[in-house]
Length: 239
Image (cartoon, rainbow, N blue to C red):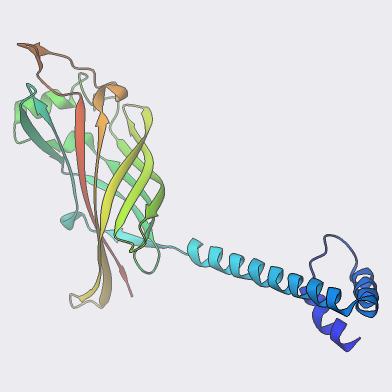
C-alpha cells in the first residue's frame, strides 16, 4: 500500500480513476509481481519522457526581442544588365523586429523596407525603379519580409530561413540561406550589451511581384528578371 501511494502520481491510464488503477495494480502485483514491475517501469519512463518533452519545448519557445542595429546592417541586391554585367543596389531605409533566444539563435524576423530609399548610385535609374514599372512607391510604400521558420545545422552556424516577401501587394514564399557569424559582448560606456550577427542570401523573380518592366536590346534583357539578395543583420540587447 505504501508503495502504491508513492507511484500513483506517475501513472497515466487514460481517464480511469486513481482508486481503480490502485486496485488493478495491487491485483496484478499479487498475481504476477514481474508483470507489475514491467507495467510500473513502463509508466515511469513514459512520465519522464513526457516531462522532458514539455520542458524542452518550453526552453525552445523562450525568446527575446533584440534591437536591430541599422548602422551595421544592410539590404543589398544585384541583377544583370543586358545579360552581362551586374548592377548593384541597396535600400537605405528599413526597420524591423528581430527575435532570438539568449544564445542568439533566431526565432523570428519581421522587416519593413522603404522602397523609396532604393539606391543604385544613379538617380535617373533610381527614379525609374520607384515608378509604376517597378516598385510603384506612390501606391505601395512598403516592402515586407517576415520569417516563418529557421533551421540550423548541428554547429548552429549554417542557417536556412523560410518566410514570405510582400512587394506591391503580392506575397510569395521564399527561402534564404545564411550563416550565424557569432555572438559577443561589448560595453560602449552605457552598460554591457550582447551582439549577434547574421548574413543571408537568396533570389526572387521580380516579375512574380508585378515588377513587369520588360525591354530587350540585341536579344538581351535590359534589366534581368532574377534579383539576387544579400542581407546582413546585426542586433543587440542589454544583458
